Length: 141
Image 1 (cartoon, one colour):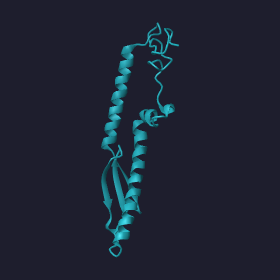
Image 2 (cartoon, one colour; image 1 turned 180 degrees about the vertical axis):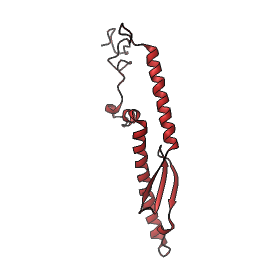
Image 3 (cartoon, rainbow, N blue to C red; image 1 turned 60 degrees about the horizontal axis):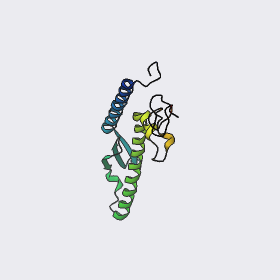
Image 4 (cartoon, rainbow, N blue to C red; image 1 turned 30 degrees about the horizontal axis):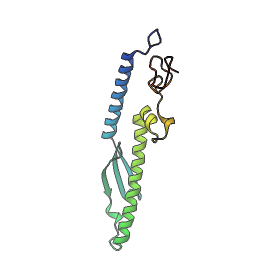
């Protein structure tokens, strides 16, 4: 802010650009990262990227019982679900670590306003001098 209490728009724009670059870098890091989930003591392994997209699935031959193909198919299906869920949990942990304040700020659901970061004084966000929202008077209240 300048001495008159007004917002320095150059600083605001520079900060916004820096945040955008950090967000883009974190998103790229997640797209490039891979995490593994497994089930059945490693009989099934699921690999997902940091964004939660399934990129590989490995099913061990030991998971198949030739004497009981139908039962094996159901067991494999259950193991695949468990391995993918395990991998997605790991990807969620990685997202939290990588995205840092972005994950905390935007991780809630659409109705979870408590998790949305505060932007004081921007239109509709009280507290920042110099930018009154449409519902506010000249003094920002």
